[in-house]
Every structure is written in C-alpha cells, then in structure tokens.
Length: 367
Image (tube, rainbow, N blue to C red; front, top):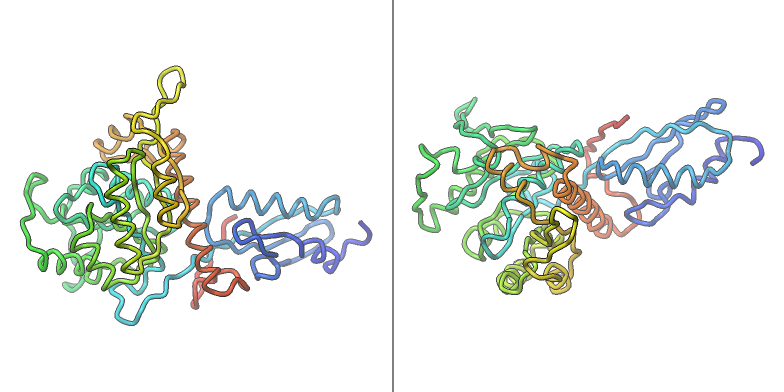
C-alpha cells in the first residue's frame, strides 16, 4: 500500500460487507472512519446487537480488507436496536420489540426457553422484560426464584420486579400461595393480560418477551388483535406427537398475521457420560416445523438434567452456568433471533440502510 490517507483507507473499507445483511457496511451507514492520526485508525461500527460473534465477524472483515495497511485499528461499537411498527394505541409504546414465545402444546419447554432467552438477550447488553402470560400456569416466579409482590409508586402503574437485570411480571406475584389456582373466564383473563401490558411500568425496553400459554386460545388471539408484536418464536420437541399441535399454532400465527421469527427445537438430544448422542424424542422435528412455517430453525437445545435443576432452584441455566452446553445453545438462539429481527427490519426498509431503530436513536457504546 502506498501513502496511508483517509481516502485510501476508506477505499479499502468500501468492500467490507455486513455479516447479517451482506451489503457494504459503509454504504449502509454501519461503518465509518472517525479518525486517522499516524498509525492510529479509529472506526465506528453500528450494529443491531451486542453479541461477541457479530463484533468478531466485523473485526475480521475489517482486518482482511485493510490487509497490510500500516495502521493500528480501534473500533468503537454502537448498538441500535430495530423497532417494531407499533400503532398509536399500542399498550407498550416504549418497547422496541415484543417477542411471543409459543408452543401450541404443553410440556415442550416453552417457559424454560422464554426465561433463558430473556437472560441471553440481557447478557448482550439489551434492556429486557419478561411477562408471564400463562395466567393459569405461571412459571416465572419459580424459575426466577422471586416471591415478592409488586407495588406502585404513583398509584397508577405497577412497578415490575427485577432479577438478574430482567424486569418481570406474572400473575404468580399476585397470589397468596404458589398453590392457589386462577379460576377465571376468558374476558377476565384478557383484561388481566392487557393490564399487565399497559398498567405496568415497563418503560423503555429493547425486548419484551412474553411466555404464552400452550394452545391457540384466548390469550394468543387477544394479543394478536391488541398488540403489534415483532413476531413469534415457536418451541417444539422433535417428536411427531408434539409437531401436530405446533403446526396448528403456526397456522394460527399465519392467519393472524403474526410474523414467525424462528423455531426452537428443545430436548433435541441427550449426551451420555461418554459423549454418545441419543435422540430420545426422535429427530428432525424442528426442521419440519421451520419448513412448514417458512422460518429459520434458530437452534437445537439438548436435554440435560441441569436445566430442570437450575430452573427449580430459581437460577436459570444461562445465569447459573453460561458456559454450559445448554446455556450456550440458548445464547446462540438469542443471537440468531436478534439477527432475524434485524434482517426483517432491513428488508422492510428496502435493504438500503441498516436498521436505525427509528428516531430518536438509542446508541450504546461498547468498548
């Protein structure tokens, strides 16, 4: 390389493509040269998530483009989370993304997925809330080890509880005993759910994860009609008997125009003490649902007793042992989900600029 000038460096960087959108980052406004003093080159990269994987990919592509240019590169990372297209009567206008975790069938690990997904997003630096929308069978209090009752500062809005940096709300926090039953008809259930959205001080969140009850009943229908969600994550196990109900939930989402963000295959396999893989519930179920839904398979989560143990103890696996194989699977799923949300936002915008979250921008510097 000849003389190291700003123009020469920008010419080299012009070919750096965004790992998610596969379009030139400088053209998208996602990479810019902030300064060049001697050998010190300062760049700014604007990303849609704070994952280490995404940062590493951008760094590798930048270094490859610069080749043997005599510069020491420092990248300032900024995060801009895309925003869903919410209407004026939206109950949570300050929440950028609402993610519905659904299954269509009980017993497939939907709540476990919702809990660990929320924690994995929080580990990326995102502002996250988790709403237990399974009114008849709330699991969040147990899985987060929370037994307090929420309160109101102003007498108008309920303050969500917090644990591990995640804002929480559940009907379970309102019950005198965790063995009490909620015996409500549909209209009461729907009213309570909308209160948990509109009358809770969620404030500004990047992601609000909703743990929905199994099936295709009142809760899912009410949310689809009253709330503009970013989309749904469908949870299944590989076995055929689970798939039949999950197909129904996918069909419901399509009829209600709820975007399918991706599929999570839970209990995919079991590794024994010598590392042999056993597909106890069969194989390929998640991929079948993904093909039927026209959505990506976000990931496969292995079956492990530690997940149940940590959930029962109130410290989910992603929080208790982030390097555990199962925790890493959930973290990778969260990473893929963030990519998918950004990709859909990018496509809605015509594929010309990186998602900017819609003004006002929220920029967070990662050093």
